[in-house]
Image (cartoon, rainbow, N blue to C red; front, side):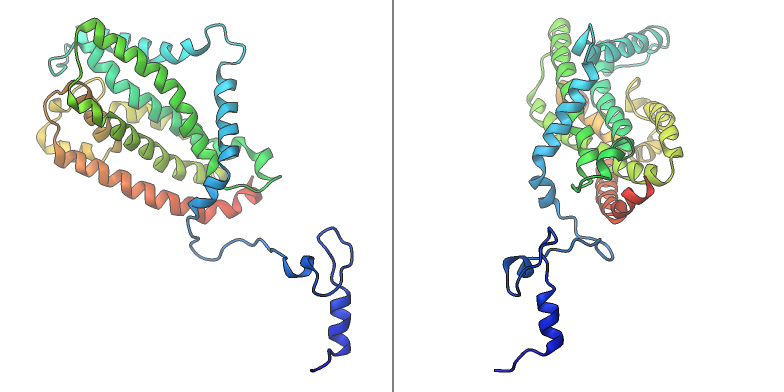
Length: 302
């Protein structure tokens, strides 16, 4: 057997454990050394790693939910205040004054049903776009999948949505409107809403780390986006030649599908909704890859 050279013997004798204590050659510390380096090129999504950190995700979600209503007199009642007030204003202006059509439904119910997915989307958009910047103290101290931060806003918003959904059931009972078989599709449209919020949020939160102007643009963007989504008006009011253009708005398909599934109104334009679904898929895949591409620079930029 060939004997080690003097240089190899010196390198073996200089091996140290992670704590800095010298160890002998062939020890477990020498055999199991893991070096964490940023991936080169476009990284793999590695979504399994997010699942391994699910306990951290649940902890951050609980922190956000409790912080929203801590030391609040009304508590979770605030989750109802915003949609109810918005519904009242829209019903007064567009339902009574402008007399917008409502697909044969009472206008407050027509409006409130569309506000539910929209408010969830807008809340997730605002929360996820600032999630990385607001967690800078955590980001620079410990390692965890950065994707958990925008996912936290996505999950914590479900609490408000659940409370608002209970009120929607009460409104349907008040107006005597019973859901049809399409109500079974509501979870599917809600999942589509979550994907739309996450896809746009991934782009915004990644850009917000480098360009803080994005944080100032998001509220204005959400306000303009509201009027480009058929919430206060039915899509039938939009001229036929412009409907495909409205379909580029991912929330158009979500809102129209959500209302149709709940109330069984006129069957939506599936071609237009197909465009919305395709936009959601494109934004989600590209946003996910872009976020994983630039997340290696977050700690340095923050």
